[in-house]
Image 1 (cartoon, one colour):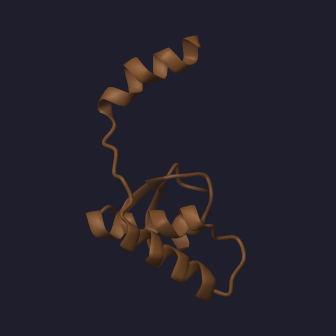
Image 2: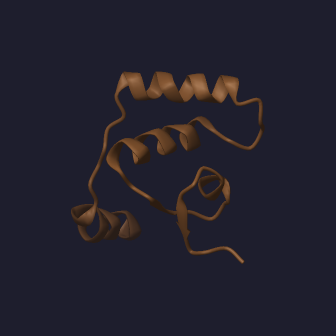
Length: 78
């Protein structure tokens, strides 16, 4: 519980929460079903859609999926 409380009180105040709307969810499902490629998840496609809508260009992640979609990633992979 100590870690949970630390997260709630130290991290949550600086986060901006974006709730996914039904049209974004539907678009992500459509992309997932038509991509024909394994490795992408519904969460990935939802993130891509929301990031583009919000004009975000950089993602904090540990896989290359965001880079293949044209986003800069932190930390950079070598």
